[in-house]
Length: 73
Image 1 (cartoon, helix red, strand yellow):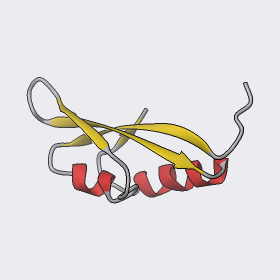
Image 2: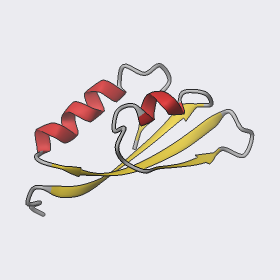
Image 3: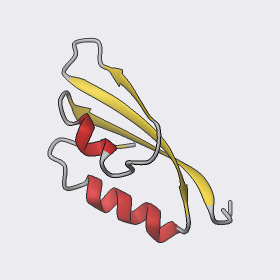
């Protein structure tokens, strides 16, 4: 499958509760949907963002990887 850019891309992350602001800071001008885990220890974050190219997507994942406890889906 080939994607043409710019394209809307959906990022999904799981972070420890309290780290959601760090994820939101990666893509600050986009809506973030949060959902807490059943025991409240983790939060899933979904952010849809218009990305200009594939390198922009990789850059977001590289920045996210520096957040302690993050899981990128």
